[in-house]
Image (cartoon, rainbow, N blue to C red; front, side):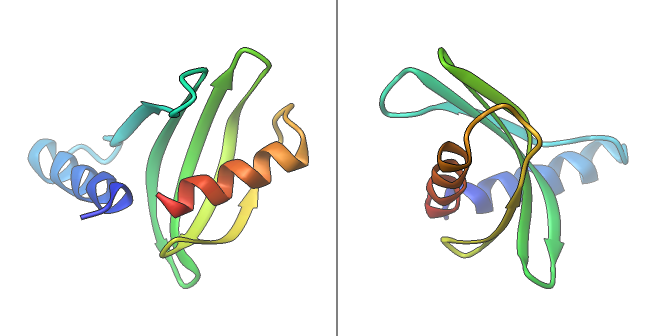
Length: 99
């Protein structure tokens, strides 16, 4: 089972156990470089793939409002209004979906 499937399972389990519609399964982990953290919340599935919100923090920038849609290990779409560059955000989306 991959990371995204675990996050989805955790969301379903959390929602069914507590029966709280506002319950979210948020998962955070450090990147292999050790200087960055990604937190993600599974939002659901649409016709394009699985949708997540990401928060990303490093010493040189952060983005807390990124939405990524993944179909398997491929990025379908991403959106962000954060302060990181397009290249960093595109790399982050591809890295996350590839997990």
